[in-house]
Image (cartoon, rainbow, N blue to C red; front, top):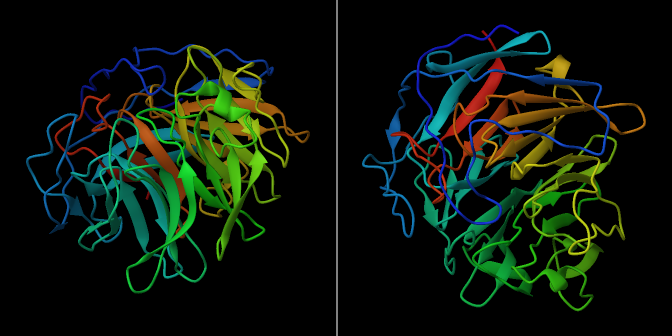
Length: 391
């Protein structure tokens, strides 16, 4: 597989906690699923990009010093934007361009009905690309906790999951700037806060909650922790959709309605699961029982199932970012739903990756997470990147 190298040395990560932890130079994959083909793409490298408008400086607490320059964004990836990496996958040549830089622990990406990109930063900032950041009242960042999930419905309403002074909660932002609390009382901790939000094809909001470092909560029917919650976006009224989860970091739906999740194991058994109503992930009694499992762990994060027309070779593939693994995975499936192949892309090139989403233009967008206290941030971190076929 041809790789074009543009020039950079990528540093190793650092950290000591049990999941979003350090990565070595290589990661071995173990699985209970027989994989037909596994392709590893060698790391590509990058050149220094440029960008346009500025926003207020980023503040940082309890992690690496904030960037010296202010957050900078471009309204969209334009033909004039510099290419920061190139790679090949499934017979298609790709280019990676920079959409935003000098951010701080980007956690979630989402688009509104007008096609504008929004993103959260864990310290409490919500931003529409090209605008000045908004501070979300009530967010308290500590360890892995803070401002996390973001989703936007067809009416442009924004839904957030964040850590407050007493709990993790899910809110809807109202037109007047107030918050309508849909779910509260989710136990918080410095690790295992879950945090991912996704709308399903049924119009309902789905949320992942971690076990808050208390494993028995995942099986406790009286606890909202260690679950996937099904939430009415109008009233809240959460119900437990699935249980037995340690720390789901990615939720995504395939066009046929299949519901997929990425989950952190302890020292083994990271999982990709198919989640159904009443599903029990088995935690804390079992790990590594997904349709695809990883030992040593790679800390799977945000996911998306590619269904756009821009990249025909990727249609139907599950894409997911990794933190410890520092790469993007592309899973393909057999007709029976089992995993057929696992392609590793951009291995180590941009460091820790937190989220991946398909944009309305059909390109794939990635969020880095190198300023989260466990990465080795480069001068322009954190960044939002755009992956598209080469022009």
